[in-house]
Each structure stands twice: as structure tokens, then as C-alpha cells.
Length: 434
Image 1 (cartoon, rainbow, N blue to C red):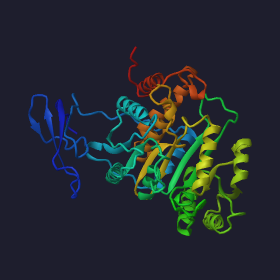
Image 2 (cartoon, rainbow, N blue to C red):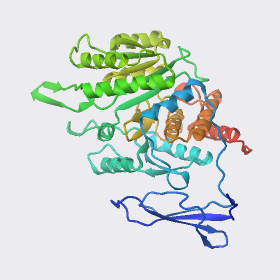
Image 3 (cartoon, one colour):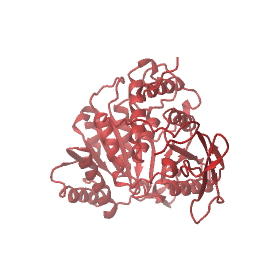
Image 4 (tube, helix red, strand yellow):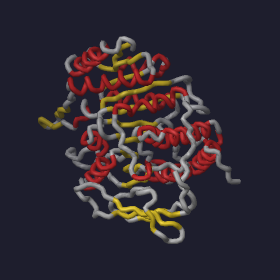
């Protein structure tokens, strides 16, 4: 490729917002002398509602060096999560647009830190920020769903559910998952360096069915004082999540899948789920299959968690087990999660905790949110960027002075982020500022 003269890039949206025909862009390269040129077309992409000028001074933009060194099972598993969901292709200039939903509590401040880390790591991602609240207005959640359908990938904080609203008001988080058919919730509970916990060497993949079960929002008061809440289990969705779990185990090099259920009591509902898991297991003879009742599962997790490898379960049990496992490795501030469908993917913290009590106090642990953003980058096939940020996060965890109060330290969020940025500079071979 011929060397380019010094230039800047101008990008302009040339169609009105919400154009049903799709997204069209007009980009021109301008050298520093002010001459227009054809050069590369369309380096960056922005949401339709914005017109933006972005400057890249100097020669042709230099891509980051390859950092695709495997970080053991932690790295390999994250790359396997999204292989069953087709990621969107890069837009103009190799950049991606991702929907960002800050959410409530500590979400907004942590999303600002994600942007800062991405900027220092030169990550080729632009965020389209959409705010969703827990109030009764439906427009905000509709806008968020439209944005995710447009971009196909989102990074979100948790949206608090307002319990003072009438029963007809549904959880915004649940609406997102069901509207986009994000059927597989996946979290990776793994012991992290520098975090002292009762159990060591935990490495569990949890696959939770995300769209039915007790979270179907089907309940009513049949007579005064008597409430019926329906649990929906279908063969199609049970087979789908079981297939996802076994395929994930196969792609991640895992040896065992455990189905968690309560089929001894709910013989039809959980019995169907268990039968579907057995049916899928028969197609994967190289993977050991076990099943365990949910109450025994929680006891086994807190006494001997190392026995578990991949776990698959219906919706409610997954919510409980996710939180138990997060507690085993240090708490909600350390574990990332992802929600996958056939088309869309949404990344968030594993426990979906708003952290409202510590919001705006500069003590929130940024680890889970940053690791979720790394999972998102792996999904987008931006593996080198995911690797450098993940390495920096894990390296910072080794420094106890950077630990936030939730894991026994006295560090602040800002200090932890600055230390992570310092490690990114070291990993990427750039000079560390004094």
C-alpha cells in the first residue's frame, strides 16, 4: 500500500435519523493542507442522529500489534461463548458501533470508565448510548431495543426494577432478553489472582436458559389472597439451551456438563428439561453428563465447587446459582456475564446488581464491567484488544493496594482504572507516563 500523506478524516451522516432504508454514510479524507481525496473511504461510523468530525493526524493509522496470547482457560472460554451467535461485521474503517445502556446505580460511572479504558487501548468501537430507566414509560425500552437491533451488540448496566409500580409493569431487563430472544445467559466463574477466598481453583461455566421458566411474567390473583404464578418449560427451548451448553463445552475443551433441576418434585416441567438434556447428551458421548437437584447443587457449590465444569439449568435456578458462584470467587464486582441469541448479544455483569448503595462514591469495583467489555470484544473478533485489557485487569488485581472495599481493599475506582490503563500501556509497548 502506498504511503499516505498526513490527513484527517471527516465523517458525516448523510441520511436522516431512523431511515428505514438502512444506514448510509458519506466520508471524505482531507489532508492537512485542506485538499479532499478519495483515499480510504469511511474510516469511522457514528449513530444516525449525530454529525461528527474525527481527526487522525499523521500517517496511515497503525493497528495494535497482535496480542493473541492465550490466558489459559480464562481466555479460551471467553472466545468460545459467542461462536453460536453470528457477530456483526466491522463497519467502515474496521470500527464497530455498540449500543451502550448505562443502567442504574453504579452503571453510569462504570460505563464512563469503560470508555476511558477503550480510548487508551485504541479500541475500534464507537458507542451509541441509550438511557433506560425503571419508570412506567415504554418509549425508552423501545428505543434501546431498536438500537440493539440496529447494532446487534450491547454493553449494559443493570436496570433497577421499580417494585412500587403495578404488576403489569415488567422488568426492563426481562423485556430486553425476551424481545431479542437472548436465550443463553453465560457466566464464567473463575478464581482471580490476588483475591483471597475460601475456595481456590474454581473454573465453572454456567449456562442459564434466559427466556422462560418462572420469568415468563405470567401470574395473576385468581381470588383475593391467592396468586397463581406460571412456570413455562418448553421442549424446543430446553433442547436449544442444552445444545448450547454441550456445544460450548465441546468448543471450550470441557469434560463434563451438569444439568441442574428439581424434577423430583416438578415432574412435568423440570422433568421435561432434564429429559431434553439427556437427549442432547446422547449426541456428545465424549462429554460426561450428570444431573443434580438444585438444593443439593447449592450445598455442593459451597463445599466442593471444583467438581463442576459446565452447568446448565432453567431460568430461576440459573439466577440463584450465578449469585452463589459469584460469591465463591469474591463477589458481584468480579464476574462478567453475557446474553446470547442467534442474532444479538448483550454483555453485562453476572449478578445484574445495580450497586445503588455505593453509586457515585468512587468505590465500585470496575472488574466485572471491564471483563464484560472484554467478552464483547471477543464476540466482535477484536481478540487482541480483549486480550490486552483482560491482561491489564488481571495484572492490576495482583496489586492489593488497588483492591476496592468489596474485596477487602481501600482503593478507589479511579485508582484501579488508572492502574489498569498503566498496565495497558506496558502491554502495548508504549511509554508509561510518569
